[in-house]
Image (cartoon, rainbow, N blue to C red; front, side, top):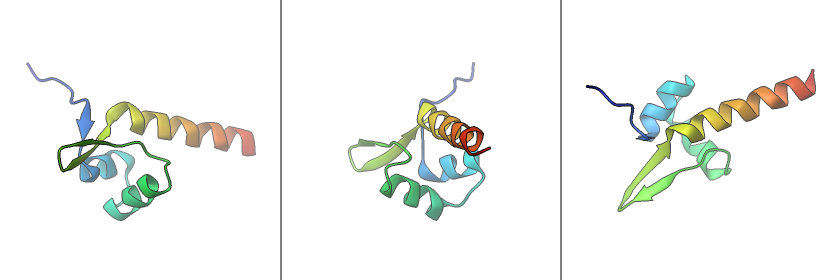
Length: 64
């Protein structure tokens, strides 16, 4: 049985968003994409990716 991870790496987050790793780090630095730290590892919660995309969609609707 395969389970869906709650946290992904920044590279995996970039793949899910369809952008580059550098862009993900820029989003993190600007506070647009939430991360958590486990020891020395930085991970992106999967629901934070969905929240970010939903915010983008809402901004696009508001601009239209």
